[in-house]
Image (cartoon, rainbow, N blue to C red; front, side):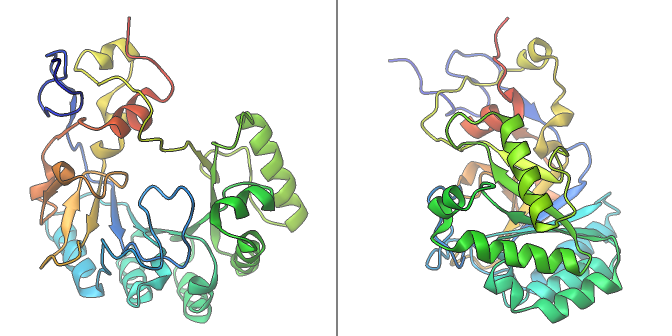
Length: 308
């Protein structure tokens, strides 16, 4: 029987040397604030919900410890990202965000812009005003039409999210949107055109043609067939390991029942123990073998094929 793919961190199923990515410089440090969320989405890659606490809330003190380590070791961290779950459900979210901004880091918060965020609107607006240009809020808006967005996130969620986005825009927040490219066969150009119409109609200062202002994410299908990434793939694809997310970022999580947080290789693999690299940023600076289908599908191939 042939060996299974994505099992051996050093070798592929064909016996070829598996590609690994070294941490060139830690530019982006992510914190998963916990997997609890006010929504249960149909295709959430991390299975967030009002009941899923597999990743428990990080505390402001725990986040400060990692920020202190980065400052002590003079790591070139430029941006701090907060993801979840829904970050604004974490009771320490505003304290963590204030600490990050006070230290002069750029901050990126991923949110659905619904009630958990709006509960903090006065303090959030004050933080943004006190640290102009440092805070970006990326709102999850799965489609430019309410029907498909609500199909994913629940009836009525589109309009509530739009109200949250309007509030952010009116108060001068830097605003991005995360959409999904997985609905039917709608090409990217048509998706961006649809979002452009929505942004114009709602008076939102967003450029739908900008891939940062509007990020369109593919579906994370765990059953899709993807090839393993070998060391030879870099040359075949004409791609540098430095372009892969784990060459410049790490994510901190705290597992339910754990005494302390852990540092992971990336944001996409929160539950796979082989991508838990250590308890500190220093321990997590070691190379990451690309030993998961997501490494191939999202971070290396991007629609290409690893073949000559």
